[in-house]
Amino acid sequence: MLYDCRDDASFDAGLLHAHSALEDGELIVLPTDTVYGVAADAFSPQAVQRLLDAKGRSRQMPPPVLVGAPTTLGALAVDIPSWLRSAVEQLWPGPLTVICHQQPSLTWDLGETHNTVAVRMPNDPVALALLKQTGPLAVSSANTTGDPPATTAQAAHDMLGEAVAVYLDGGPTTSGTPSTILDATGSTPRILRAGAIGLDVLHQFNNTIEDVLA
Image (tube, rainbow, N blue to C red; front, side, top):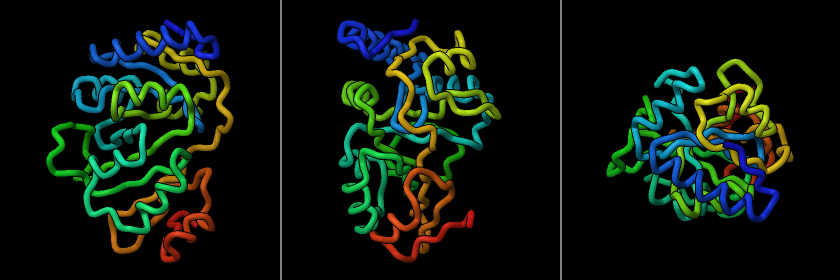
């Protein structure tokens, strides 16, 4: 079912049904500040596998996790360097995904993560409202593997169809550029995917960051 979240009544109903669907282990689609994402309960292995199946991805490509507050990073990750905490405080919510060492106490199964976790806080009112209700969600771009990421709810529906229980429509996303992915698990931080936040911005926090794609 699709809910137009630009309408207040539909917004409230959409959040209610999306939250319920996630609790039941189903998938939902939501807008972010980059592209639309398909989401699952991060703490349900069955739901995460359903997400991977819908996208046509293997466990070797685990989804990142979206959070509703910068402070949640400390609950999901360990050994977070001070410069990265500063970057997150200033750049979140926004199009920066950070890869950190995972908290060993977490009991989820996102796939073959090698004890790491990729985390982002999106700058979108619909996504943030939902995340404040649900807590962390496993989210990947709302498209089948090999197809362009969806920038509208209808485009996501065209690709994912009945594999998704609830579609939250926030209108076209303001940017079709994906988030920058920054791996902070090694001695030298590395950009693994170029995105909306450039190396020049990240160098303000740590000038040793390398762009491995350059």
